[in-house]
Image 1: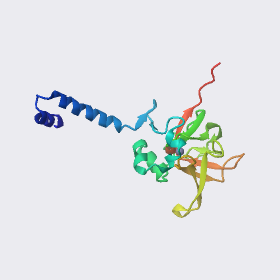
Image 2 (image 1 turned 180 degrees about the vertical axis):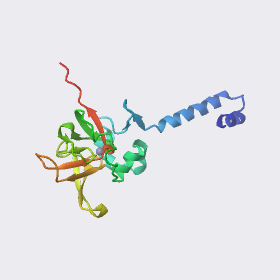
Image 3 (image 1 turned 135 degrees about the vertical axis):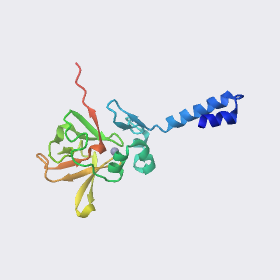
Image 4 (image 1 turned 120 degrees about the horizontal axis):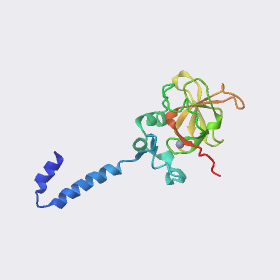
Length: 193
Ligand SMILES: [Zn+2]
């Protein structure tokens, strides 16, 4: 319909106008494509996916608006990380994930947990007994839903990740109960000789 309308308006005298319209349509669509898909089909945040992203380095990533986050996260990822949501147990892509590597923040790609500290808690959420390093996450008191819990957030971008409990295994006794939707995974490449 649009092209017919354009043709009527422009007539056949100005085919350049028609080409210009088509070009603008293509450019308009591509500029909104903030979300890319990796080879497994999971979305990655393009703005923050590069090492040394200016948004991360300048600290501005903590000031990103909900509208900006919505352009680079799926609705489910946005709900968990920016609305402090919780995914249903036994539904996430990582609760039963056993590959070796590093779990990173789905929002800013910071390293959050190592597969070496992941364990089977039986809760239906990915569980770790320690963060990647001491500064990877921040802990906040959470008094929502009539409970007193300790919320775990990404230290770089403030994304809600999950909660930490005191019923974990040795050596820390902690259980970092994390939503799969807040994580992405970087597999450890086999060492080459
Ligand atoms: Zn983050």
